[in-house]
Amino acid sequence: MRRLTAPLAAAMLCLAGNAQIAHASASDEFRAGNWAAVVRDGHAENTPDSLILAGRAQLSIAGYQTADKASAMAIIAAAEADFDKALARAPGNVEAQLQKAVAIAYRAQLARGIGLAKDVRRRFEAIRAANPNNSLVWGALGGWHGGAVATVGSFLAGTVLGAKKSEMERCYAQALRLAPGLPSTRTFFAITLLDLDPANSARAAGLLKGIETLPAEDGFEAMMKQQGIELAASIARGNAASAQATARRLKAFSRLG
Image (cartoon, rainbow, N blue to C red; front, side, top):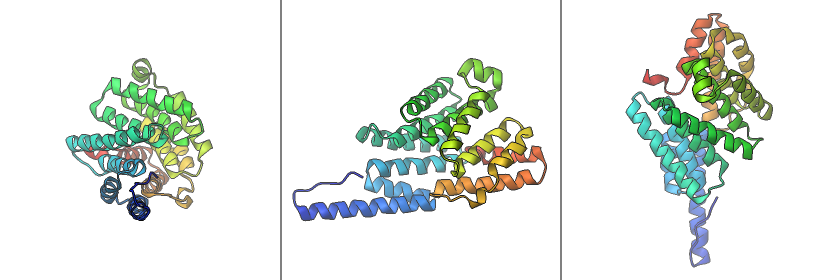
């Protein structure tokens, strides 16, 4: 965390202490999943780390709590502005780079923008090349390939975007190898599999087995863990079509209809 400076040592200590309190508050609120409070406290602290938290909270609000497309787009734009501010101060911050790409992916999804979707892939691949052990970027690329195929079909996804089921499988598999205990990776993979085909319900169930025992390190992981538990229960009822409907309802922006 970057510290504020002042001419006097006492002032420096005071300001640093205040920044730590604000940052701890934003972090605590993020761990609790209190998204509006994260945005407020993150902006008040105004550091790269706190701005990333604020942006991530806004993406969660846009994707999972917003029912109006115009409102969702405005919230995504605000999140993207926070990531831009963080990157202006810390250009090498990998989390800011990744979350910026996620924000663009959200815009691409809502606007159905082919150019934006291609830009997202390039960004994810650049981050992966520089950070091959980052499980989140591998999972993001798996979601990009799988989501593209699920949205427009294998042929168009492949010819227009270069998206492939095989790349989805490879990327998610690597994400799981790097971070097998992360609830979000398992839940996103299971949702993607069911979104593609209800016949994937057995594989999705395998991914979600024991998810209730996995630790959730923050509010986002807790939300994904709960989604995984809900999806696993739906699969267990034995109706593959219903399980697919549940998976699609759990996706970001499903409230938009």
